[in-house]
Image 1 (spheres, rainbow, N blue to C red):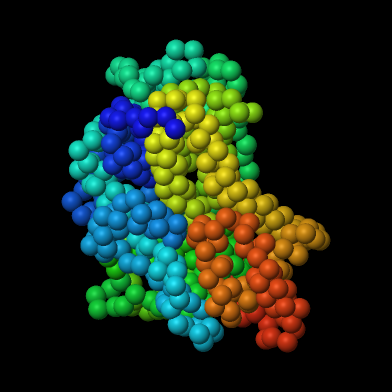
Image 2 (cartoon, protein in one colour):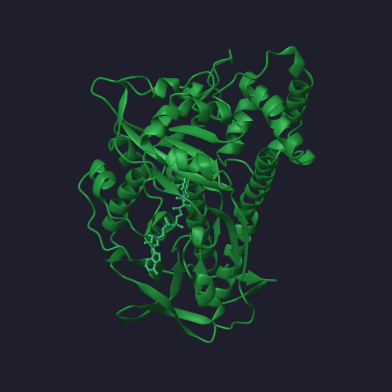
Length: 481
Ligand SMILES: Cc1cc2nc3c(=O)[nH]c(=O)nc-3n(C[C@H](O)[C@H](O)[C@H](O)COP(=O)(O)OP(=O)(O)OC[C@H]3O[C@@H](n4cnc5c(N)ncnc54)[C@H](O)[C@@H]3O)c2cc1C
């Protein structure tokens, strides 16, 4: 094992979720970290001010619903428990298994390991605001706001710094965490290294729409119903998200092909009428419960994307690594991005601890971490999106739906989900998979899960039909016109 590097100068491009978590873990490992963030903003005084006023133009999705999965909570618990404590102090809440266990499950006794099965509930900007204050207070971190990085400073394919709008900066290691719009692929291609970086994309097939609410004076946070806080009506999916400080949000995933529905839901008045038709959200839309605090926020052009900077075992560059959404992103509907930011930050910390100044070994270690721990989520997301898009387009064209995609949907809705809702063991395994605590393929390889799901599928006729969670598409439009 190489000597661990001490007080190495690391330049982190981007102060979003991945940049913040990496800066925190690397600084606490003993490195000197400078974060170069293009947005030039002061940190607001409170979480509510952050939500109302923080100009995070570099993160267009800052005011979209974010589910913060148990994997992120577990990483923070291990690496930075003070972040969890600060989040709790700032009004974030935990959604423990006692609150999420489906109502039909009678055995509600707590079990060993249940402490891991909890999500954090807060607005993304609350998490970012808490992290930013903690990161900026770290003695080994320097924050450079208003720093517009224009490219990599390199000799041949070895990167030794960053080109900024107002001059060059030398650094021992560059960490590119510039988010999903980062032009880093062309920067690295322009280095003409021993291999060219690659990119693969797959459409998510959805547009993401969110609206946030605050509870009115004296009102209580809505409880989860027997249907949970979301559903899939076939032509659209929806979910309620708990926030912090008496806030919550409601989100739709609208198929990109359904322009009419998209236009309808962009209209705040129609939005309010539609959400009142959704059975699982009835407690969330009760009269007098809450008032909207945002418009309907829309986020389009969402895709699954993987970029490789190590090809056939050869790094395209040394001295720099690309992490976070700049390297790999998945459909946000699955809520994985911030947990992946945590995995990247941990992997980078481990790679530096093991390989120190051996830049090629660090690049290879990160590529291996991506392949083992992140790419399986990308592949799963592409598969699920591909199946759903086939069903949506058949639904719209009136064609026969794709057989494999229909079978997969039937298995989930009539096999897996009924098993999950009725069996405490299956529920826990499903929760672990959904929350990235297990490898994404583990659930479907689990014999008990498969047996319970197949049994539920085969006995579906003996159960009452699945409850209707909302109007069908035609009903919805006729209701609103
Ligand atoms: C609509 C939507 C909903 C989502 N919902 C969820 C969810 O429910 N749960 C979840 O876990 N994840 C969710 N995600 C994903 C999650 O938000 C991202 O994965 C996460 O933000 C990635 O962090 P990042 O640091 O890589 O990029 P970002 O957070 O986007 O940060 C990139 C940063 O780099 C800065 N930057 C960019 N270029 C430069 C430059 N040249 N110079 C200097 N600075 C630069 C930007 O200003 C920005 O601050 C969602 C994403 C979207 C789009």
